Amino acid sequence: MRQALSNFQAAMSVPNRSSCLLYYYAMLNFAKAELLTVRPADIQGRVHHGLSFSPGRHGKSVAGDSLKVCKGVFPWLYEHRTGHPLSIGTKLPIRRLFPHIPEVGTQSTDMGWGFEKPRGFQHVLAADSQSCWPIILLTESSIPTGVTGKLFSKHFERVENPPNWRDVFAVSRRLGGYSMHQSRKVIPHTKNGDADFAKAHDLTWQIKDIALPREEAFFDGILCPSFYSSKMFPMPPSMARYAVTYYASSLVRYKPSVFDFQLFPEQALLFDAIAIECALPMLKDTFSALEGKVHLFADATTLRV
Image (tube, rainbow, N blue to C red; front, side, top):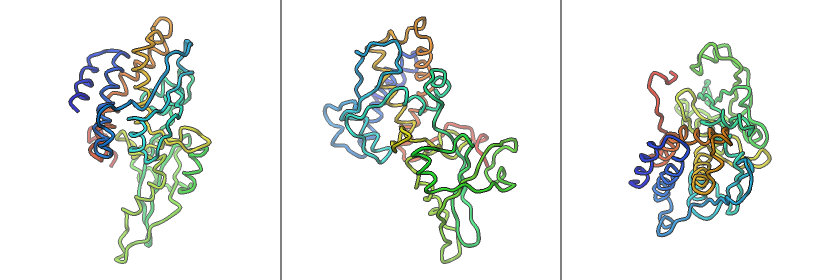
């Protein structure tokens, strides 16, 4: 933890993409601290990164680069955070990782790598005289497709919005283009006739591979699609940030020419954004994992009530 904090504090004083090297070593040590709680025997002696990158590929664009999963911290951290093992030798194409990082969605789109994939959603628990269930509110563009859509549709179905849906979800009356999706299952009331909201909330976590805790005050959660549309491969923003920061640190060391602002301005701005925008979210990822609860850096007046 001391090494991680020292690297993080040093990185904050570096104004551009070069700080990615320090941020990565901060995240690596934070990850080791996190993994000590679940697999302490592996965090002893020499510990490998769990990712590898070969800088020998010739090319002006980083779009064709990919990372390779190796034994070490990254697959261990992935399994701890997602609940799924990650096969050694798995390839992670760089242009697929960037759209999974909300903070650089604009830059990813400008690079032609696709739109930002993680989308926020609102969530409530509803009840009638006999049972209770969860309801998710999505924009039309956030309704998942592909293998992600199959998982979502297995557990949730679209229903008609009632006239007071904005009040129910505590959102602005100016908002439009939203649809409600309720759980296909319901939880009966207890023998005493009380709504069992705890069990109803658990129904939402049937889609835990694509539904994640919120990262900002306006949303109640994040819907993050599979890394591939044809097969389920969870890729939460926290793991995409970690992988891309490792990649950026490798470029800083071995291939700094791709950052040349005059030759490749889009790439220079892209990785400046990684250094500037992802630092605090990565710190929150670690803090939330170590504490076992979500942490938000938001004023209380921004919370929906």
